[in-house]
Amino acid sequence: MGLKGRFGLVVSGGAGVVLVLTAAGCGGGGDEQGALASGESKTATITPAHGTKSVKPDGPIEVRVAEGTLQNVTVQGQGATITGKMSGDKKSWKSDRTLTPGTSYTVTAQSSHDGKTATATSQFTTLKPAKTLSVLDVTPNVEGEKVGIGMPIIVRFNRAVTDRAAVERALQVTPEKPVEGAWRWIDSTQVIYRTATYWQPHQKVGFNAKLAGINAGAGVYGAKDINETITIGAAQVTKGNISKHHMTVTRDGKKLRRIPFSAGNGTTREYTTTSGIHLTMGKENPVTMVSPGRKPGDPGYYKTVVNHGVRFSNSGEYTHAMASTVGVQGSANVSHGCLNLSPANAKWYYDIMQRGDILELTGSDREVEWNNGWGYWQLSFASWKKGSALS
Image (cartoon, rainbow, N blue to C red; front, top):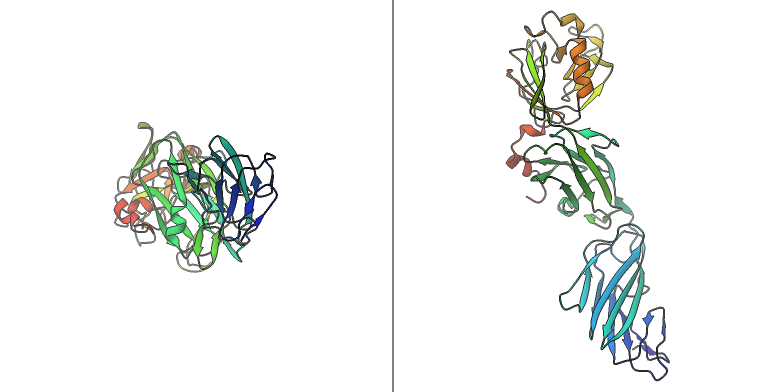
């Protein structure tokens, strides 16, 4: 049972804060639960109730009126901005996203009835979980960087995600030039977004992870939201034939340069340059090339420092300068698997490269694996989508 104050305000316990306004001969008044106005009775109820502690972050805020209509509802608190939706009859309002854990919130609801207005307020705190889920990093992540039209969005978390579907629903990608895309979970801590076709060049892509308050499973809640803007640059596409020893570079459909190279000699699988759709992953100058799995003195051991390296797989494949093979570049394959270029061509390619540019190679019997570096375009989009928790 509520306690009646001298102005006719009734504060109810239980699930919500209830504001009851009745006619009073001396006009209006109020306390921390709301303000009073003279007029006929009207009620506003806010859930969670005032003073509630350890509210689950994935629970909604709800406001209802028995009489009259809601005019406005605001939610104040640190962390994620909380918005909501009003019902068509303006009798109820419900938050449309999760709350930030370990946060104090103040909900203010304004209602009206027969031309009279009233305000109800509820203050509560959300649960502070023992474990929270955070984004460790998002790739691409270099401020001011322009990336290529094949660029994936790679998200890594600080801990394993139990409820992958719930987390995936919180990840939003909004390009200026729309294209279908999907997430694929690589493991419990990493998820990658790839489009069905290449991004349209010269645009901004928004990435928003509405993680705050998301129930990630096993008692873990999302700690905070993440917002990033990714800039897609020019459509730079390189196509090369390993058996013909040349590649042609285009930008936005226009030919820039035809470059002779010397690829892997093919004597072993290790020394065979991979065919398939690669993405340029980064550049290093200089870069040290060391034979994998071998130590000094072993057969086949090498350690070479080269300039202007552009990486395109995780199996040690780069384009890079190699002055000693200029004489056979364009006519023979003599490398350990990289694409040897002249010093001038290697520097030119290095200078124009954007991470996520397309490097499509044909002409060898070794296909790049879809999970070798950023070989994600080796999968059909139908196959890619099977890695989504929402498939």
